[in-house]
Picture 1: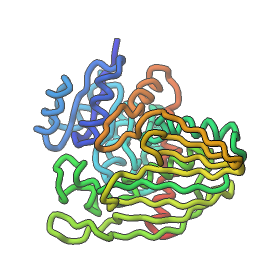
Picture 2: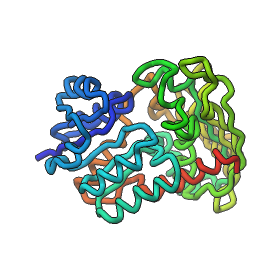
Picture 3: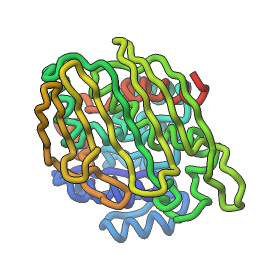
Picture 4: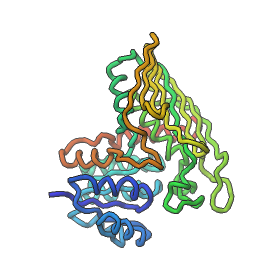
Length: 336
């Protein structure tokens, strides 16, 4: 017998990631949608064969709903995820876990009190190229990691958001809070922590709203670009850049520099992973294309979340790990 899941929010992340991946999962029987815009929830319910509810309490109070995806905008995560956990639901919260560490701690307290599972949607851990890179790093195939550089940038969220305009909530300080840092940067901070089995602790960052304007033509109040230098607990140093103004092809690349060579991830259109050893040997891995806004493939996040529930295991990306990443984002936004 399958389970029922609820989804809070009916924007693009629900339409393109959560709903289709729940629908494809053999353990999920039905999806129940809630959005403040009822018509939007009803449209997704029709598209994915589920049903819509008029208020979020219906999700919380329905004993047949086992799990909830929190796909609301950033400023509401600590409210929705906390309430869902305290109503006895397992929760998959979209990133960032909250708009600040204080609110994220409220969610973790609710998770501890409820005993339910909390997973955060850091999907970059699940790609085959990143999994392979972690395997090579863990085995020390190229010796110890010394330095790294990572980048995540595209043309901006206005073409991804549900309303396809500069009125997107991503540009609103009160809703997004962290701009490109919380939208794209948080993915790569989590990825570096994960790949290196380490934790970024020191940050020096520049942030700017360099080009994006809102629906009134006014420069946005959140950053559209970030460039930072990072240091980890184990002493590795590296750089990171995140951007909503890469007005060309998307860049989602990472380079890991080790004692005996280099690991290049998502630099080449055909070979997602390239190993260059210091003796000149090069190994190319053809694994899978990176998931982009234009290339929606199964992220693996939903399957991992459902698996953790069905097998009563700790989720792959816990709230504890997500809050470590959020601390770095706070430091970036503060400049250090």
